[in-house]
Amino acid sequence: MTSQSQGISQLLQAEKRAKDKLEEAKKRKGKRLKQAKEEAMAEIDQYRMERDKELQLRQSQIMGSQSNISDEVEEQALEKIQELNRSYNKYMESVIQQLLSMVCDMKPEIHTNYRITN
Image (cartoon, rainbow, N blue to C red; front, side, top):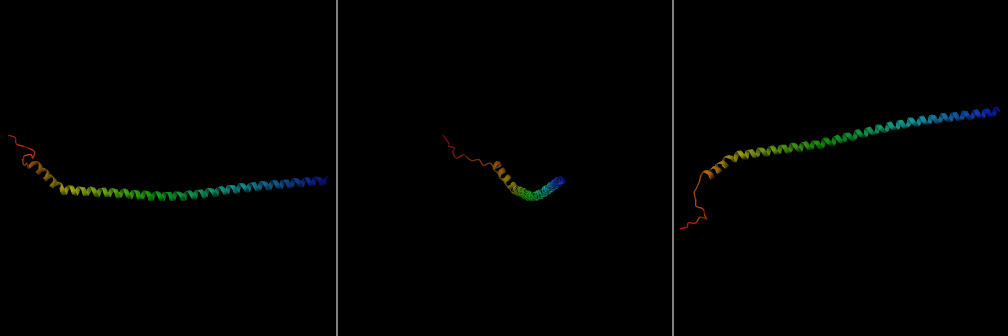
C-alpha cells in the first residue's frame, strides 16, 4: 500500500510540476506577445513619423512652388500695368490732339453721291 501511495504522490507531484511549467510557459508567452505588440507599435509610430515628414516636405515643396508662381504672376501683372501706364502717358497727348482736330477742324465738302438736279 505504501508503494501505491508513493506512486500516487509521485504522480501528483509530476502533475503539479507539469502544471507549474504550463503556467510559466503561458506567462512567458504573454510577456512575449506584449513585447511583440510594443515593438510593433514602436515600428508603426516610427514609420508614421517618417511618412509625415515626407508628406510635410512634399507639401512645402508644392506650396513653395505655388507661392513662387503666384509671386511671378503678380510681378508680371505689375510690369504690364506699368508698361500700359507709360504707353498711355506717351501717346495720350497726340491722340487727344488728333481727336480734337477731327472734331474741330471742319472742312465742308460735297458728298460724292450728291447730284445736282435742275
